[in-house]
Length: 246
Ligand SMILES: [Zn+2]
Image (cartoon, rainbow, N blue to C red; front, side, top):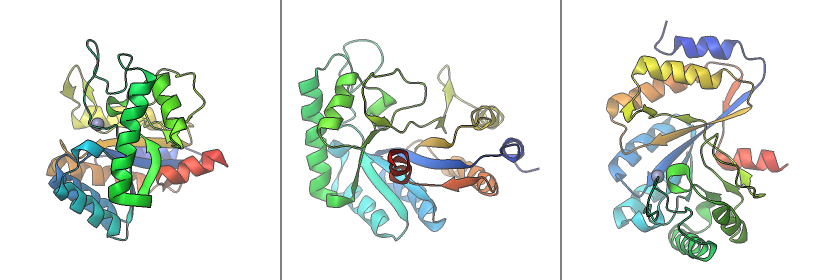
C-alpha cells in the first residue's frame, strides 16, 4: 500500500463528487521555492491559485510569477493582503484585524489591488486571502466595495455576518500542533479525517516557503493518490466561485 493508502480507502467510500483546489500563500517571498512548487503544478497540468503579497514583490518575484502565468498551465494569482504586516497591538497576528478600522483596511486593500493591477493587469483574480486567514466584517465589506468576488479564509473561521462569498481552505498541508509540524503518520490521519466528509469542495492550503524537496515529494504522492479516485477533480478557485454563484 502506498504512503497515502488510507486516503484512498476514505475516498473509495465516497459516492459524491469532490472538487479540490490548491491555494498557495505568500507569493512575493522565497521566489525560488515558489518557482519550483508552481512548476510542478504546471508540469502536471493542475490548477494552482497563488496568493500574492503586493508589497513583497521584487523584480525577481515579478519575473518568476509572470513566467509561471505564461507557462501555459493553470496558474492563477490573487491578492494576499498588502504587506503581510501584523497591526494588532496584542493577541494573534492580523493585518486586517480589530485594531484597524474600515477606512484603514479599505485603503490598504485598494493600494494592494492597484499594485497588482499595475504589474499583472487583468490576470489578477478578484479573490482576497487575508494574511493568517484572519479578518473582520470591515474587511469583508471593504473587499465587496472594491469589487472582489470572494474571500478565502480557513474553514471554521468566525462568521463575519457579511454577505461576501467565501471559499475557505480546509486542509493546512503544513499543519502544526502546539507549534510542531505533524509527522507523516499524523498528517495522514488529519487528511483522512478531513476527507471523510460529504462536502463537495475541499481547499488545500500550501506555503511554498517552508516546503523543501521532501515535503514537495510528499505532496505529489498525495495528489497522485487522490487523482486516482474517479470522484475527485481539480479546479481553480475562480471555477469554484463561478459554480457557487451560478
Ligand atoms: Zn500568508
